[in-house]
Image 1 (cartoon, helix red, strand yellow):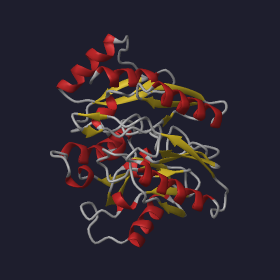
Image 2 (cartoon, rainbow, N blue to C red):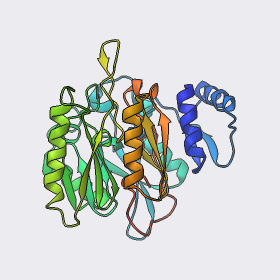
Image 3 (cartoon, helix red, strand yellow):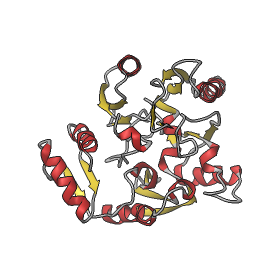
Image 4 (cartoon, rainbow, N blue to C red):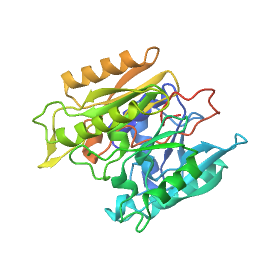
Length: 320
């Protein structure tokens, strides 16, 4: 566990119980890094003996839902490392079922090869997705848009699916995960990643996403305001673009939000200020993700929430 991840765990643990998937030598490394920042295992901070190949549990972990009788269910999507891009992925592919087993939950086979970061719901029947992920022939060959929509309705109970296909931040290796592009803040507000300037190579694709969301916002039953959330200036490591988006925030219940920052003072402060303005009563905390982003993800990608109880209202987007 790199030090940056240990600090991320600490930020979550300040308000929320944490479980870390760590097996064998990985568990020993985790304990050492956690101890270095004053954290030790407890009832609210547990290491779970489940092996993994990668850190992006949002993508290979289950999506938790509640059935009609309020039974908590783990929807286990099939995982092949973003269309077979990285080997090995056997442990990641098995992790969802193991999590459901350890949690003592009913497991529902999602029936689609996809990742949790490809889904963004308002918790009240509306879902944002990108066809680049869900209709990818390397994930779901021969599966139609209608078939994908039907399965998402069956597993998640969604009634309205919005397909956002403009583009993703440069360097993205997921074929356009929505958690880097657009997120619900509540039932009436969505933030959308846009380029910081027209000179940014991300400008055309991200602007297309914004226009698509604006059009949808005028047509959906519950009115939605789409807010522009500028990305940091472009960053490259060894010539390769690093995808950085403030949309990759993590909601911790109704009153706390962890937001990735990227050591870009102007854009970091603008993003934090905007989210604080749009989320009154929510503690908005910046978490340094400069190092984590080098792995092509951030806070939402590196976490997988499990809701404790059925919520009385839907106002947290995809983080319960």
